[in-house]
Length: 116
Image 1 (cartoon, rainbow, N blue to C red):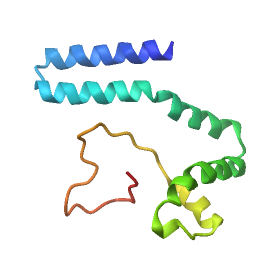
Image 2 (cartoon, one colour; image 1 turned 135 degrees about the vertical axis):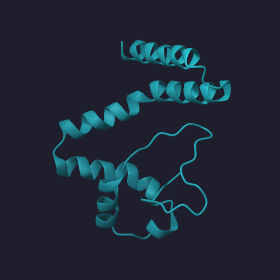
Image 3 (cartoon, rainbow, N blue to C red; image 1 turned 45 degrees about the vertical axis):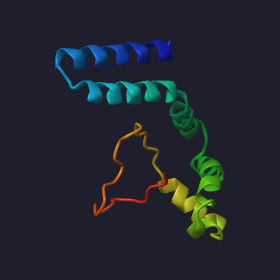
Image 4 (cartoon, rainbow, N blue to C red; image 1 turned 90 degrees about the vertical axis):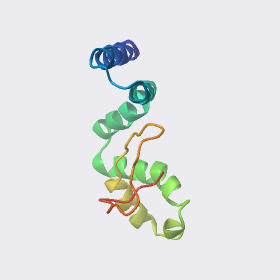
């Protein structure tokens, strides 16, 4: 049902962009991103549901284990104690970007740390 609802939203977006005469290249990028979000919505939804099911401490420990594995691939976190990894993972926020999107531009001041 959620998949069908997501597909309906993608089709509505396509229709809207055509009516507004959005340039074709931008339509392609927007449609690709919307489909990616619909196709991967389950991953984010599961993480959100876990946050509601688990105690804050247990959720933090779980996120530290899952996201910490990714963090430890970066040199600055390779030897970090578990408590540091746990604190960092509590602050992480997942963002979804489409192929070709700019996350940061050269000389732009970042508002956070990005792991791509």
